[in-house]
Length: 518
Image (cartoon, rainbow, N blue to C red):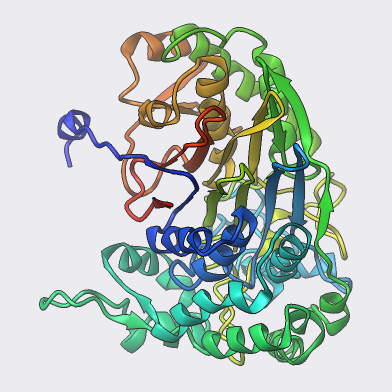
């Protein structure tokens, strides 16, 4: 595709509207969540149902072997919470397992020095204790209305049916094929006959059976969520992990508990932004807004001065993040979705396996794709984010809910690793500082400033904006294309407090992303 042809294209995406909605990176998953709303569930029920199903339709992004964070706005309490189900290193992890190998290029695009055999990137040593299941169970018990079997049922149905493999699924599997081929169960599942599955000339996409995942989800539904950590599923997980050399033990699983914590909240131009705290991207976003001050406040599409303010603020915020907190520069495979119900409850949920297909390990006895959360740690000792036993790593997640005048206004978040913060910062700025509606904001071009290299500017930006940024910081022109998504993969649902109508939007260039309203 030529540069001139790419610049002539104008791609748009329609918002979804209703009394409640779910928007996700996979439209089928969004429809499942919206069906939960239609059947009387609240936003938390819809989010948990979506979370437990979406790994069956985009297993390279997330699943029950992963981790994440959920930001929640509870309308009746007029306040926000965060559910933290982040990664934790095994208690018996030995940092010496990850010796640095100088002089060798890394096998993935991250900022850490390369580790022997890429043990922090792929395979059994890269796996952290997964929190997905307990995180969803904790959110459901605290804020939901549905039972555990109810939220599990759609995911079981999808797993039994098998994942439909269209052109985009083939693209993702092909991208991960080299590392998937190194692990027997992953290779047998995703590379039948040694090659990625493709759509035949007759036009019928093949389906992939995701190992023994359907049986595991059925057991999880019947035995309850703690079976993943203390029961038969836990024993099967640990047996496979032990055979592969992982230090994760039954004690690690039994000791894992998600936590409900207060968000990091701050005021911005008449709104209150509630985002994830601690070792996430939330503090970096807050710092970026502090550095912007009032330079981005105005009316309509951001002008050159607003974009300069964003670029400079993110540049400094990331410098501080890398210096004081540590950070992984991995192009992650994460998923984000939002749910809002007719009562005004809101959920912004980001969950991940970290890299594409996580550790690339599918556990033979359970069909669970496992995360590679150890990659979030710095392998160099003596750093703020250095790998250590029983420790939580820094991550890029930035799930956020925004309130105004004591009511939930919008839920927002993104996938995209280090590109998450720039995307969410700009989309919040466009709505809170510039007064734009969500559909307009998502159709405007953005920049990416994520800690290393020049400012990446969407080449659809006006020339005056690009030149203004270039006068302050180095700039690289980048197309906005389907793959890779150079400016993250955000989504948002916004509620009109006067009418109760919600409007949901997804990233324009994401081919699977969509929403469903009720």
